[in-house]
Amino acid sequence: MGDKAYKDLHRKLGLCLNCSDPVYKNRTLCLKHLRTNVIAQRKYQLKIGDAYLEKHRQIKQHRRDTHCCERCGAPLPDGWTYINCCNCNERIYFRRYENADTIV
View 1 (cartoon, rainbow, N blue to C red):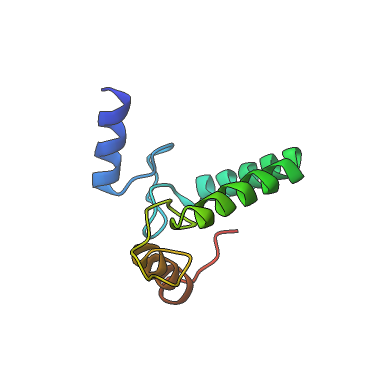
View 2: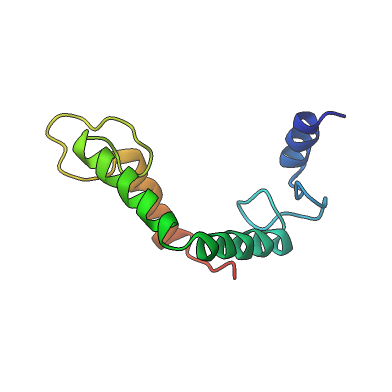
């Protein structure tokens, strides 16, 4: 089975893409692999330090200057006063208030 077919089948069955254990709610990985990924990402951020933050600051500033959504880069409608598009605003709200749980 190819990698894409394997991942699609595991997503459909609700199994972790790495180890075939049941997934953590609304995710594609089990809790063990979610924690591993979070820790690895944090180590990477600390390793490259300020360069990581500066790169993302520049991306956000460029998106603001071109009147695009800060998160996804989609063009904002005329007269839109927020820095994120309506889809990202809804996503932020849902993640922050309705699905608030910690991974690590």
